Length: 325
Ligand SMILES: [Mg+2]
Image (cartoon, rainbow, N blue to C red; front, side, top):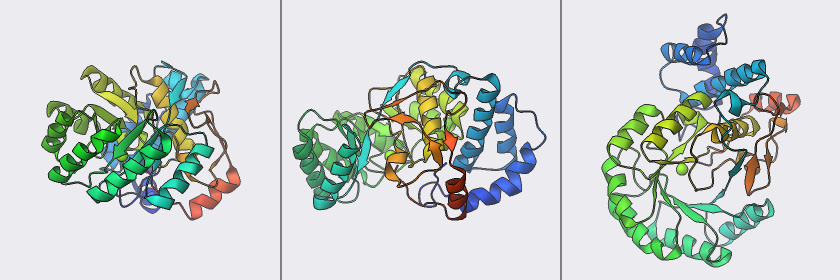
């Protein structure tokens, strides 16, 4: 998975350390079934580190689904759908924004979110420029990555309303559930991303009435099975679901797609199953089927991707730090 030190406190070096030190001793020699028991063993052996655990969990679920000879989405209880709408994340103003949009449109993307949360004036300028570039009918969401104070989030939301934002993701700090709840009054659906890692976070956000939508990650959840469980909790609480991203490469992107297809309910906001579009090369030789508008589920067993052995070895020696969120 694609943890970064800045965002989740994990990277490839911490992952290698804790896998060797804690997870391998906890798992080697254990039966594959039930996978949930192996995930529980990982939790007993290692605190935190959900992205690292998710990486291992994806491998376990992939092996389980392959043993059943079914796609992972089927092993997870689906598929409830075989196509998932996706969008692309953009940042920067002026030339940088236009270049990012042109690249995204070339890759086929037709729905977007912009990164905001640093400076309200510059953020409003970015949204105004993007709206003018894509026209009134294109979906644009906002993602502040928790960067605003409560006052700035309200000021930004009020000024951005005229540009028709589809959602307001993580407007204030992750732990500020009251701030998130109060911003729901603006009339833009509030999405919780950094606020919700695991199911305990989701339950706390639900009790606080803090969210319209939760951004579920395979990485934050600790694995595909747990992401699906969290999706069921969110659905039962009337909270919509979007699949979020930390810029996954081909294996992680496939895990996102299978989870999205296994969920009983997936909200109307296009998901971020896009990591591969951010990189020049990938760890898979055959990845998921995507055209920028949708990602489509195949019928191969497990994740349905084929690793590029040469590239996988090279990336193991110098892992990418790029994050998308
Ligand atoms: Mg986000």
